[in-house]
Length: 344
Image (cartoon, rainbow, N blue to C red):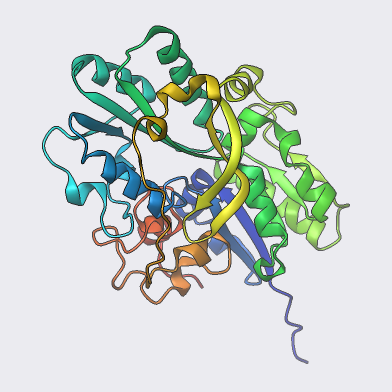
C-alpha cells in the first residue's frame, strides 16, 4: 500500500534573527519532510532599495559631506556600485549606534555628517530618539537619510498575493516587542492564517512551529498566539511607540526586488525635516531597473529557499555576494550558507 503524500506546509519566519537562529539550531532537520520553513522580508539590509544606496553615494559628490553607516550596509550594491567600492579615506565611517553619529559630527564640526538610518520599527525608536535629541540640542551638522520601513504593509502585500502560498506565520519578535503582539492579530483575524510570536531560542521556535502545525492540521482551533510574553506585551512598548509617533509619518516606500509598497515607509515629520538629508541635498530617487541573476526578491517573498537559487554557493558566497541576502548576517542566504547548505 502506497503511503499517502502529505500536502506541503509552508511556514514563513519574518524576523532576520529568527532566520539566523533557525539555520543555526538545525530545526529544519527535525521537521517532517512536508514542512518547509521559508524566510520573509525581515532583514532590513536585504530590502533596502538600490535607489537609496545610489542616493547615499550621490551625497559624497558634495563638498565636506561624510557618511555614518552600520557596517553591513557597506557591501550592498546600488544600481552600479556599493559604498565599499567607492569608499575613500575619511568619507565613510562605520558606526554601531545612532549616538555614534553624534560623536562623529562633533569630531568633524566643519563637515556635514549624514547618518544612514536603515531598519524597521525595531530600530526606528532609538533613531527617532536620536533625531529628537539632535533637533533640540544639536549638533547642527548632523543629518539623517532614512530608509525605515513598516512591517504590517509588507506582510499584507505578501499575504494578499496567492502566489506566495503561506500556511502559517512566525511573526517578527523584535518588532512585536516594540509594537505589541496585537499589531499582528490581523494575520489571523483578516487572512485566517495561524500566527505566533515566539522567542529566539531553539525550544521557543520549536514550540511556535508545532503550535502552527497543530492549527494547520486542524488539531487546534485557529488563533493568534503570543508565546513570548516575557518580552512582548499585547500593547507593546509605550515609550518606543511614542518616539515613532512623535518623529515619523508614513508614506509609500520602495523595497528591493519587490517595488513600491503603499504606506510602508517611516519618514520625518515636517517638524523635523531640517534634519532630513533629502531636504538639504537634491538627491535623485530615480528608479533604474537593472537585470540581475540574484533571486533575493523571490527568497524574501517566501517563493524560494536559498538553495533553490542556481547561484547559491556557486557564484554567490559571502566573499563574493551577488545580492544583499548573502551580505547581511540576518539574510537568508548568508544563514543557509553558514549553517548548512544542503536541505534533505
